[in-house]
Length: 217
Image 1 (spheres, one colour):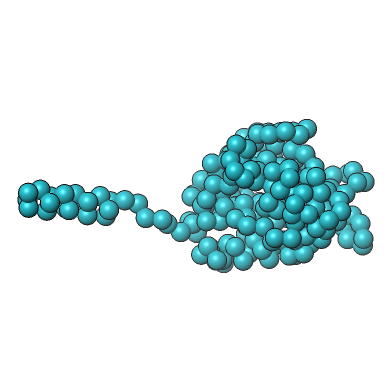
Image 2 (cartoon, rainbow, N blue to C red; image 1 turned 60 degrees about the horizontal axis):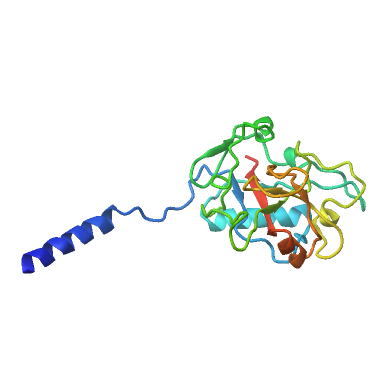
């Protein structure tokens, strides 16, 4: 019996030693979905506030020495110029926290060849984001962008007042899991407009105020 116990203990110790430990994101990481939003609906403090949130999350995850930009477009209004999300994020390629290259260039990112899926569009911590069928569903990702990554020419609000509204307006969102409803249900960046800009309205259509971040260098 004593021999059996020692043998079992040795097996358990060996198994524990062999089990993979949680690892930090790879330093080559250049893309992630924010693990948390800013908590105030689509009021992100404008593009600058959204960028700062990307920067903070990446550095907290241990990835330093990079400049991060939110994949968000901005409309020309209230004295601000139009900005295209695709023009903010650098040239690529972009790697997720697990070392998977999700796109090799801006054109590749906006083509059917990109590798953006629920499994690959992960957070800065390497976690999978809830999608359709999960509780809660948080697959709506804020973009304010058309399929080509450019700001909509629509005169209605598609960016929640350029990411400063937590009440009136709406924002274009994509589905990170590539399924759901809307005009383009399989689109990662332009599935449908949100119900509104408040945290409650974002939750109501399957979101949490999350958005994509890309390293621009």
